[in-house]
Length: 430
Ligand SMILES: [Mn+2]
Image (cartoon, rainbow, N blue to C red):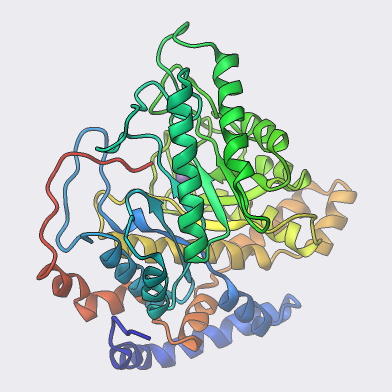
């Protein structure tokens, strides 16, 4: 294993925080014991939690207007893996990365798999890209890819997705996430029906290439880059597609890809009900697909999503094996710090949701005791589980405070010596 941050430094910082930590953990343990919860079982849950880091997330993002590069940004997939390794070493809750092609193309994927393993990382879902043109491609995606009116363009997009599956097999991945930007900007530009039929036809060709143990994750998004209509705009379109394609196709929920004020946790409950929840792209939003840091704007909503997930887990819901990933754009922070903070906030929501007294909640619901039911959720949500999260990290060799340890280690300044500033105005984060 390659240590990117000195274990001695992590150990000495953890030691400095030890007495206060033990005091806080003991206090929380006594509080939870009064509520009939064994803190040790919750710590163990926190230790097994993991969320995937997207390789594109460790680069500085941007908006449609500009991108302001940061110092020491990754130059390619090798640097991205190292940055993801730092996040995993300090948080111990991000054991996989989700790669993106062609952005992460290399000549030897077995070597890449070994390289990731050196940092304690495996590969989660591979992501295809038919929302932008590559320099060497024959047909443009300007007017669409899998849903294009042009047969040759659709075939090219299908071939790219199949290529992604082939790469994923070498990396040890078992799923492909398909998100397309296809849609229209003008009423009448295309047939809404024909575009969806073209999409389903093309997706069927990709589906046919899936290995037996693979899944296909369909990611919907309400709008952008298309602003009048989008082919896979909502969970309804996504579910129709998943049901049309077959058992291996499921619906991925990106928290930023919904209409404003929509009840995302209810969508999650519906997808669990039909056994079609693929997993998540975690982020937060205020107005649209803002790609803000998870839990930074509306942590209660994140908790409510996890309340549905933990409930499904507890009752052994059928076909419930969600893949958890982060999908954010870090424009004004150090991406490593944002991803460590987000991974912590996502784990926090999971642990908080694990504290819900589900038996008493079910009884309150059966009696229509509205306030009692609501207070049970709130009691879990307002519990400060920080000592549990810190303990889970410490026991696995991670940092009591990942961001403090990252800053003390001077990692960014160290890698900036070898990594030139990446100029350019493009952003391209979805
Ligand atoms: Mn996404």
